[in-house]
Length: 132
Image 1 (cartoon, rainbow, N blue to C red):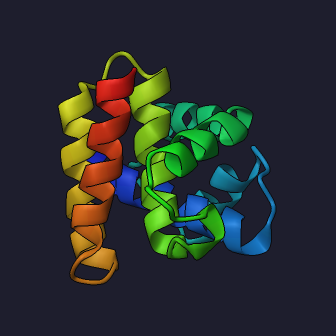
Image 2: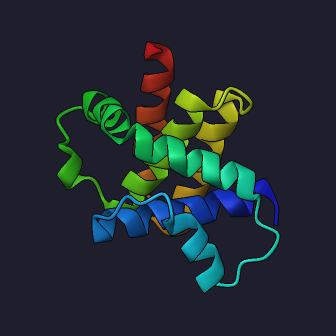
Image 3: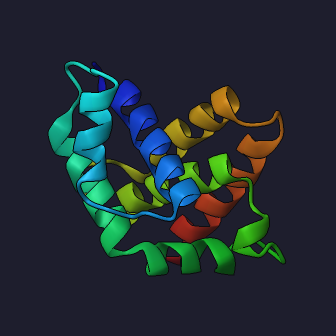
Protein backbone atom coordinates (compact mmCIF):
# COMPACT_ATOMS: atom_id res chain seq x y z
CA UNK A 1 0.00 0.00 0.00
CA UNK A 2 1.39 3.36 -1.00
CA UNK A 3 1.58 6.38 1.25
CA UNK A 4 -1.37 7.87 -0.64
CA UNK A 5 -3.64 4.95 0.29
CA UNK A 6 -2.34 4.93 3.87
CA UNK A 7 -3.12 8.65 4.09
CA UNK A 8 -6.71 7.89 3.04
CA UNK A 9 -6.91 5.29 5.80
CA UNK A 10 -5.61 7.91 8.26
CA UNK A 11 -8.48 10.20 7.21
CA UNK A 12 -10.96 7.36 7.74
CA UNK A 13 -9.52 6.71 11.20
CA UNK A 14 -9.65 10.42 12.07
CA UNK A 15 -13.28 10.45 10.89
CA UNK A 16 -14.12 7.43 13.07
CA UNK A 17 -12.42 9.03 16.06
CA UNK A 18 -14.40 12.23 15.60
CA UNK A 19 -17.75 10.50 15.12
CA UNK A 20 -17.20 8.30 18.17
CA UNK A 21 -15.50 11.07 20.20
CA UNK A 22 -12.79 8.53 21.00
CA UNK A 23 -9.29 9.79 20.28
CA UNK A 24 -7.39 6.68 21.32
CA UNK A 25 -3.87 5.84 20.13
CA UNK A 26 -4.84 2.16 19.96
CA UNK A 27 -7.54 2.81 17.37
CA UNK A 28 -5.28 2.83 14.26
CA UNK A 29 -4.03 -0.71 15.03
CA UNK A 30 -7.56 -1.92 15.77
CA UNK A 31 -8.75 -0.35 12.52
CA UNK A 32 -5.95 -1.93 10.44
CA UNK A 33 -6.59 -5.35 11.99
CA UNK A 34 -10.39 -5.11 11.75
CA UNK A 35 -10.38 -4.20 8.06
CA UNK A 36 -7.47 -6.55 7.33
CA UNK A 37 -5.47 -3.83 5.63
CA UNK A 38 -2.17 -5.15 4.38
CA UNK A 39 1.03 -3.35 3.53
CA UNK A 40 0.00 -0.06 5.13
CA UNK A 41 2.79 2.36 6.00
CA UNK A 42 2.36 1.68 9.71
CA UNK A 43 5.19 3.98 10.78
CA UNK A 44 3.62 6.93 8.93
CA UNK A 45 0.13 6.04 10.15
CA UNK A 46 1.15 5.77 13.80
CA UNK A 47 3.16 9.01 13.73
CA UNK A 48 0.39 10.93 11.99
CA UNK A 49 -2.35 9.68 14.30
CA UNK A 50 -0.21 10.11 17.44
CA UNK A 51 0.60 13.69 16.41
CA UNK A 52 -3.06 14.35 15.65
CA UNK A 53 -4.23 13.00 19.01
CA UNK A 54 -1.45 14.67 21.02
CA UNK A 55 -2.05 18.04 19.36
CA UNK A 56 -5.78 17.95 18.59
CA UNK A 57 -6.54 21.22 20.37
CA UNK A 58 -3.75 23.07 18.53
CA UNK A 59 -4.77 21.57 15.19
CA UNK A 60 -8.41 22.50 15.76
CA UNK A 61 -7.38 26.04 16.73
CA UNK A 62 -5.55 26.42 13.42
CA UNK A 63 -8.68 25.22 11.63
CA UNK A 64 -10.95 27.57 13.56
CA UNK A 65 -8.63 30.58 13.22
CA UNK A 66 -8.32 30.09 9.45
CA UNK A 67 -11.85 29.09 8.49
CA UNK A 68 -13.38 32.58 8.35
CA UNK A 69 -16.54 32.59 10.42
CA UNK A 70 -16.95 28.79 10.39
CA UNK A 71 -17.12 27.20 13.80
CA UNK A 72 -15.54 23.77 13.91
CA UNK A 73 -18.88 22.09 14.63
CA UNK A 74 -20.24 23.43 11.31
CA UNK A 75 -17.46 21.88 9.22
CA UNK A 76 -18.42 18.59 7.54
CA UNK A 77 -16.91 15.69 9.48
CA UNK A 78 -15.13 14.33 6.40
CA UNK A 79 -13.58 17.73 5.72
CA UNK A 80 -12.57 18.02 9.35
CA UNK A 81 -10.85 14.62 9.21
CA UNK A 82 -9.00 15.62 6.03
CA UNK A 83 -7.90 18.91 7.58
CA UNK A 84 -6.75 17.27 10.80
CA UNK A 85 -4.61 14.68 9.01
CA UNK A 86 -3.11 17.27 6.67
CA UNK A 87 -2.32 19.65 9.53
CA UNK A 88 -0.82 16.80 11.53
CA UNK A 89 1.59 16.31 8.62
CA UNK A 90 2.22 20.00 7.97
CA UNK A 91 2.84 20.93 11.59
CA UNK A 92 4.58 17.82 12.93
CA UNK A 93 6.19 15.87 10.10
CA UNK A 94 9.15 17.64 8.52
CA UNK A 95 9.76 14.75 6.12
CA UNK A 96 6.61 15.58 4.10
CA UNK A 97 6.66 18.80 2.06
CA UNK A 98 3.75 21.12 2.89
CA UNK A 99 2.74 21.21 -0.77
CA UNK A 100 2.39 17.41 -0.81
CA UNK A 101 0.19 17.45 2.29
CA UNK A 102 -2.03 20.13 0.78
CA UNK A 103 -2.28 18.42 -2.60
CA UNK A 104 -3.11 15.06 -1.05
CA UNK A 105 -5.74 16.64 1.21
CA UNK A 106 -7.36 18.30 -1.79
CA UNK A 107 -7.40 15.03 -3.74
CA UNK A 108 -8.86 13.08 -0.81
CA UNK A 109 -11.58 15.70 -0.36
CA UNK A 110 -12.46 15.44 -4.05
CA UNK A 111 -12.89 11.70 -3.59
CA UNK A 112 -14.79 11.60 -0.29
CA UNK A 113 -16.52 14.96 0.18
CA UNK A 114 -18.80 17.29 -1.76
CA UNK A 115 -17.74 19.00 -4.96
CA UNK A 116 -16.70 22.31 -3.37
CA UNK A 117 -14.94 20.99 -0.27
CA UNK A 118 -11.55 20.86 -1.93
CA UNK A 119 -11.61 24.66 -2.33
CA UNK A 120 -12.43 25.14 1.36
CA UNK A 121 -9.69 22.70 2.42
CA UNK A 122 -7.13 24.22 0.07
CA UNK A 123 -7.95 27.69 1.41
CA UNK A 124 -7.60 26.74 5.06
CA UNK A 125 -4.39 24.77 4.55
CA UNK A 126 -2.87 27.50 2.39
CA UNK A 127 -3.74 30.07 5.04
CA UNK A 128 -2.15 27.97 7.80
CA UNK A 129 1.05 27.44 5.77
CA UNK A 130 1.36 31.19 5.16
CA UNK A 131 0.85 31.78 8.90
CA UNK A 132 3.47 29.36 10.23
